[in-house]
Length: 293
Image 1 (cartoon, rainbow, N blue to C red):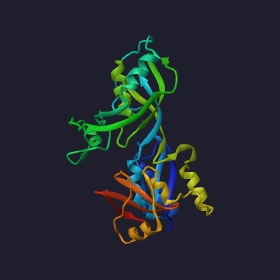
Image 2 (tube, rainbow, N blue to C red; image 1 turned 180 degrees about the horizontal axis):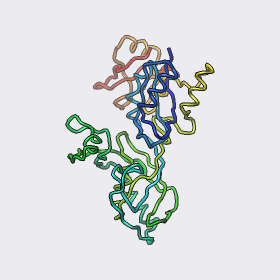
Image 3 (cartoon, one colour; image 1 turned 90 degrees about the vertical axis):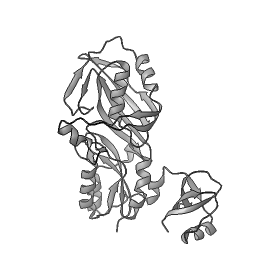
Image 4 (spheres, rainbow, N blue to C red; image 1 turned 60 degrees about the vertical axis):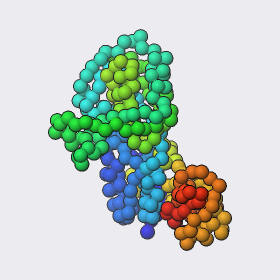
């Protein structure tokens, strides 16, 4: 049975579920899941857990993400990205400066409230928002709090056809809608806008430069080369780490609580380089939440 983590490079035009479905066929494994949904148009890092490693999926999903993309000021779309119908146009004044854009972007750094886009899988009254949108129905959308760790412009401003485009990089928490961030940025600058490109360059400690496409995974699997399967330890890279003594490992193996001089709510506990358990703090002690011995 195959078990471990795959750093998959998802291509445009497929859902995260599509990627998992295809991997099940390639690897002949049923127990596969992903650690963080990517919209169909978005490419980049999609963390995959196989076999026993699916037990650490929740920690991969909770980890922060890094994206690189492009904002287009000048018109907005129904889906907040390039795939939707244009719903508003606002010609961009060429007097817009990089200072204006940078100041607006910096205002989003920190904890912010977002309203999920209508074309999203967020559920309201048991029904997904995109189902309401496709039926032409309006519904009140619940706001959510997300964290923007860093949000910076990475190109000069490009003016063309009454629009202005520029590239960006954002580091953010789970649950952030980057296309909504692009729309809200445009609104702050006084323009209709949308996200014209997006690529996830890092997630759960995995980086795009090390990611493999589905074709590359299929080729390696056919050749009997499973070197691309990363150890389960890669699934807890986002958690604080604790090194256990042999005595503590023994206690954990029996599900007992141990004393550690750390303050984190969750810890990835290691015996040298091997993941032993995920521990949660209970009062002054730590107890096993998941054991991997």
